[in-house]
Image (tube, chains in turn brown, orange):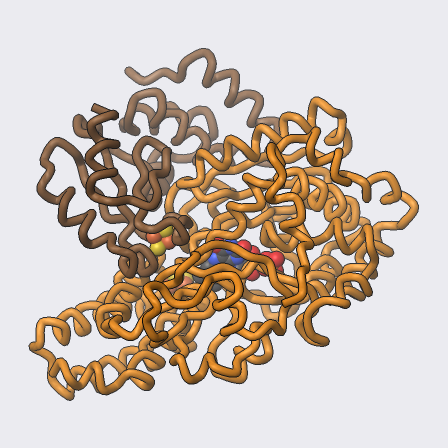
Length: 146
Length: 406
Ligand SMILES: Cc1cc2nc3c(=O)[nH]c(=O)nc-3n(C[C@H](O)[C@H](O)[C@H](O)COP(=O)(O)O)c2cc1C
Ligand code: SF4
Ligand code: FES
């Protein structure tokens, strides 16, 4: 098996196990750790998780594909999640999306409400929210992140 | 409008998220006297306050607490719902970033009342930044010795709206896909790995310290007889000053919008409001005119108060485009277990797309209503019936806009 959790993550997993009545509860936490460790969730990582939490690999795979934030493939490009739901749309997310559509150095995803509707339009990059967007602001943020 | 800050009292203080500021302003005060009451007495206080769940349903909290066994051989748990994915809703986020210690205090009281030794906070995956602030507060509470008898663990979701539904949330916490469970026939607690579990929204739990500290009557002094207390109502969309502002139930909707929101953006006329997240029936501006913000008034309008997150739409809004946007959401977020939901959300989305391309016919409008009908009342959870009601409402109230595109 080519995937191994880091020492630090293994320690975290041991601590977490004490916090739940059943190790199956660790499937999401472990998937998160694997994704942060490698940038995505490999099939090897799923096998490693399967052994730790005693859940069949196939079932963990099914879980990983259910949740939109888990990535089963690496992405070379910067992933940019722009909210496209109603409040953002009413406040101009179409314009932002159209602008970013043309940028082929990023991986643009249209996502549903980010819970930031009062500061629409909104996008999320690497866990960070960027709010009250304008095209100029988006360009400045992307330049900064490059 | 009467000032009534119960949950948002400390929001504006600098560093309000820290233990020091919380304690300096009365945080954790209830814990000093908590043990003077028995767990059942605490439940009685909550029942007397008629506190209603603030996650969308408005179910009486005390009645749910009472379902939890007081002398169970199995451990009991509390699961705090911070999935907050209903479009138009962003209030729980304010609590966990601006006064996380209020939530922790509420958790400690609740766990005492239901005899739970461990609480989980299920938080949507996108809220990582805010989760870090919440975790910082929990760490502080641990260091301060506040969590000696009760553990708190934050459990992160990973992008699935449906995990806000309480049984889907627990499935997700059990490490599975977030599929809602079949409802039991009789009233009973929820179950986390077969252990009795209480699920409450963040804001519900954050309201508990005020009630225990000041008494049920102090809470009932706000709001209406049937909808007592306050809610972190919020506004987004075409409004001058979008945001979250606490108000008491029974407040006039238009007054709220004018007072806190500064009216419709750009001085335009209001066309419609979706009152409590996109799962609530849309209201025309006329319907909003004399409306009050409480569960009963909204039910009378055949809509619902939901999470209190209002989405405003001005006179220039294309309602067919708005419906299309909501249907895309429903299609994307259906968990796929029930055929009427899985197929109906996609099909109706496609039909509205066709109407927007000006290729629709009168039959398509009828078909839309037919699909809505099949989605109502034949599914495991209320997601599909909500989608159904949204379609019917938009078409009933803005039929001319649909017909104009045929
Ligand atoms: C489709 C669906 C989504 C829901 N999403 C949420 C949510 O994001 N947050 C929440 O607190 N409750 C949500 N609920 C309500 C929960 O099922 C549950 O009733 C609530 O968390 C109970 O807490 P309360 O009584 O304190 O409101 C949702 C319900 C449904 C049917
Ligand atoms: S109604 Fe829709 S969301 Fe609810 S359980 Fe069925 S398929 Fe899933
Ligand atoms: S609609 Fe975009 S954050 Fe809510």
